[in-house]
Image (cartoon, rainbow, N blue to C red; front, side):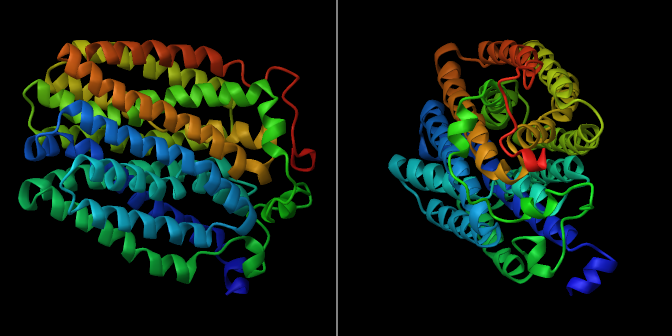
Length: 421
């Protein structure tokens, strides 16, 4: 098998396909809260703020699990980590399907779901891209970001249809079954590193002497202690915090309820999110391609500034046509920030430390998302609308655009792994 893939198709592409499928299912599980806010509000008579709190708990655990997942991937490889993540996701969905009280909502639909999807998060994609690829890393990271978009594209309208036809409990069970079904392909085809199939990373040559070293699990400690002492880490963490707050925290959780407040049906709202997911797919692939060719700091500045402008316009857009334009604009850079952020982490802290360092930066992303998911619901309950929340998010995104230009400019941000710089 190694010989076959070494001469015709590098096995790394098989690992990419399995990882992409895993991220699609994980995105589907994470899509459920945004679709189920209103059905739970109507069926269980819980307030939007209480439901948003459960969403926030899920996003927080999602983020807190990611660093641990990245640390484990750096040491034992991704294969069994993916299996564990899928199993926890399935357990969360099966338990959530029978919940009847708020504590179950917070534990099963919030914390347990967050842990499962946090194990199988974008940290997995970043680690796989850097373990298996020397060339095309930006493109591969873009593909993984696009897989998350594809999960939204598939599951938002599917969940809305299933909830309308079969109810939210049956729809939740289907999500659990989908997670279980993917475990066998992962066990059969996923591999931890190119060495497992007798290969070097894709694109490894004599010009990349650190390629093989990057394929092996990292052994040295103190990586995060060094990273925490660099301005680059805190700039990356701060901008990604804002990314999480303005994307899956606020828009991912509250866009469908916001659209519903303007008299647009859930089916049409899900269609708008599907459109957003389509543009996200396109934007993230293009972002990966651009990251391989242009300065990632400048790309991030453009992405965050563009996002900020679109969010500042959203409170004044209430028609279907206007919301469709917003879905296109916002979708183009919903996850487009991931490839340049991952590239900056790899270039600054070393490719074999990507799982660990990016895991903590992604944790900051999810803390931002959790904060915005909860505060968005609180703002709606207090003010009766989301307008103020969108305006604040727009200003924060513009701030992130300015901060992105400072990443890596200070000479105090040394490469932690000079052999693969």
